[in-house]
Image (cartoon, rainbow, N blue to C red):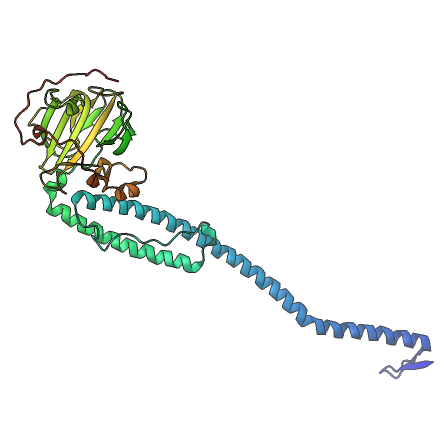
Length: 356
């Protein structure tokens, strides 16, 4: 038995007595022990719990930040990829101009050198993205240098630029390329032969434009007695461009110009037809140049010279542009086509017969 006396501060009040038997004392001690143990355990576990909560919150915040950074990186990669494509398109155009003007291909310190692109751009590491950014910056500087030099060249050689074939001879939305420049199976002999120009299929009557300033050296159908090969082109217009280029427009329906007439780039000179040896209404467009061999007009791929239309795989076209230089079996141009021979009397026909 335990006796506890509670003495009030006011002596006028009675003293209170509390009695605890042995069992109550043991229960109280046990309860206090458990409470104390719980308090001590909580104090011991508190740092671990706090650290875990902090770590979870930190990891969560870092994951969110990582997702944000990854999304920003992905957006940057998409922008860089778009810019790379744009720069490549501009570089192809610059290379075409360099080829057209016959300039050195190392103009402006050469071309691009983009790093290889990852199959999955989302997995691209930050260091790779930084490398691509640096390569893009350097490529833009070199492209600007090339453009500045080309601009200077064009300003100093304005006459040559005007006389260089550089546009489509027909409206861009009214033709289909049916036979490109290069080796093909002839639709007439079914044997392999070298096609010296482009066949642009278009409806009869579609306008044909001069692709550069020049002088008409021939207009009509070439006499069969002089050359069967050139007679097969039916109604044909030939333009001499400052004695460096000759453009040929074959299988015309009607001819709108005459020999010795001066024409300007974009001027209508004829309409698409089906005259001569032709299986359908189309324009045979051919470009000859003597820049490589002065005095000898060699056929070149007209697509390399056309600047107002984007062909499929233009970079590959540039790489194959030397094919014509390796192929020497071209029909020589009649002197009347170059404007250096005697005048050939011809009669222009409005519409030639189709020969299968």
